[in-house]
Image (cartoon, rainbow, N blue to C red; front, side, top):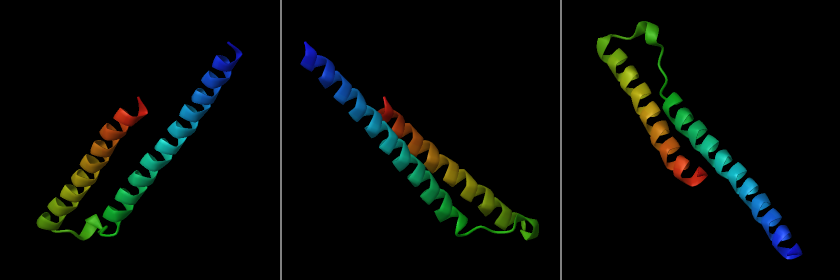
Length: 78
């Protein structure tokens, strides 16, 4: 019986460490996606209607990609 308790502790510790690493990867992906879209950041003040529409589209794409990442990481985090 004493070994079962130690095995449970080791499993819990491993899960805790894995969870931390998974969240780090998720955060890194979020940062990289945001950085990618920010490479092409524009000043909204001086945009014409077409440029403004593209800026809004870019923001929508970024949010959609991050939502997809979050949904897939939810599967891993369970």
